[in-house]
Structure formats: C-alpha cells, structure tokens
Length: 145
Ligand SMILES: [Zn+2]
Image 1 (cartoon, helix red, strand yellow):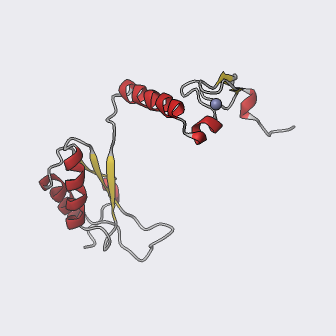
Image 2 (cartoon, rainbow, N blue to C red):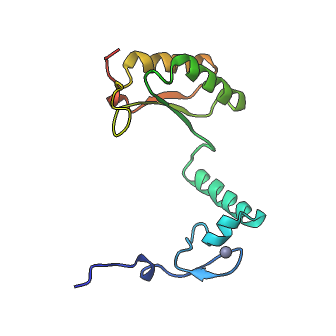
C-alpha cells in the first residue's frame, strides 16, 4: 500500500486574482499565486493587505502585537522600557507581551527568566506608556535570581 499522499489532489483549483493562473496551491482566502506574491506588485500587495485586514477584523485582532523575549543577561528592564517607549510613541494601546526565556537547544548556560526580572520589565513597559502589557508563558518563570 502506498501511504504517500499528495495534498494537491484534495484541493480544488483556485484562480490567482492577479495573473489568472489556476492551481490547487492558491488558497481561496488569499487568491494569489506564489509568483505574484514574490513579485510584490502593487496589485498583489493591495489584495494581500485587504485580505489581512478582513481576517484581523473577522477575528477581532489588533493590527500589530509586539513581544520581547526576556533573556537573562541580554534583555533587562531598562531595555524593555526603551522598546516600550518606541511602541508607545506609535500607539500606547498596542498589545505588548513579555516572554519568559527557557534554555533549550541554544544558550543552555543561562537560567530561565525570573519572576522579578519579568515583573520589573512589565513595570518598565507600563511606565513607558503602554496600556496593554502582559507577561506571557508565566509557567516558565523561575525564582533563580
Ligand atoms: Zn498570479
């Protein structure tokens, strides 16, 4: 029995809204072929931007979300304050997530982000003017430092 499966056999052909080419690899939601996306024509970018906006509206998502990985010894509260200040200068309501670092494949010599580090960064981000700040993946936070 051949278990190899070609997903293209299951998908209906869609037409690219720019060049008109038909392929099963063109999503119905975006309606652009790979070549037109890569060419980045004004028409393709306009279509992609409109679809992006529609999807964000449908799922009630903000235009942009920012996040910073709190790597111990690399990213401290002072730097988070500077990053947050820049984001706040664009729009103070942009959601900003501070993410705990945990050593995995690389940087195994570093500890996990501590609770104190994350809370200091959160305070710095709020002090810089952001209104929608949260600490993500709290379950990774340590009390190592
Ligand atoms: Zn095309």
